[in-house]
Length: 162
Image 1 (cartoon, rainbow, N blue to C red):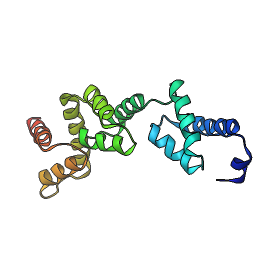
Image 2 (cartoon, rainbow, N blue to C red; image 1 turned 90 degrees about the vertical axis):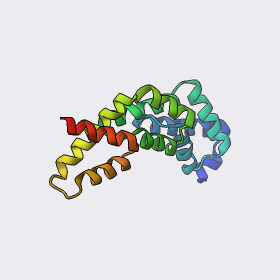
Image 3 (tube, helix red, strand yellow; image 1 turned 135 degrees about the horizontal axis):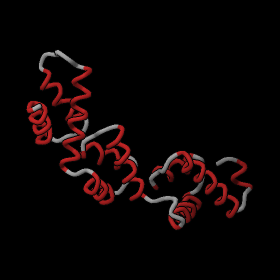
């Protein structure tokens, strides 16, 4: 912990941590786990972090449910992924499995996931024309993007119809 943290009173330290948290949140919404980790890196004690997190939740500046929904919406729009990979990304951000599952179930229906898979497949095919074993490679790519085997078969079948 830095010297200026040692000389501050508890209230001043909490205010400084809150200011740091607000600064981080001004760039983008964060999960509770992300914010806690960043405040730990800045040298704040667990008690100070707990007080700040509690206050931010009371004020609704920190909400893991909202974070998960925004994360999934962003990924759907700009960086399509399958449910498996989206769930893994949310877990890495510290989102509880139950909250991640709710967000995914509400925002990524089977039809939406099929559409995401088709988008990913079409984009990949544009940049990999005329390759040997193209279907096998496409399936591997879709698997790496978080799509399940049954859905991959549906994606390939949908593409063959068109």
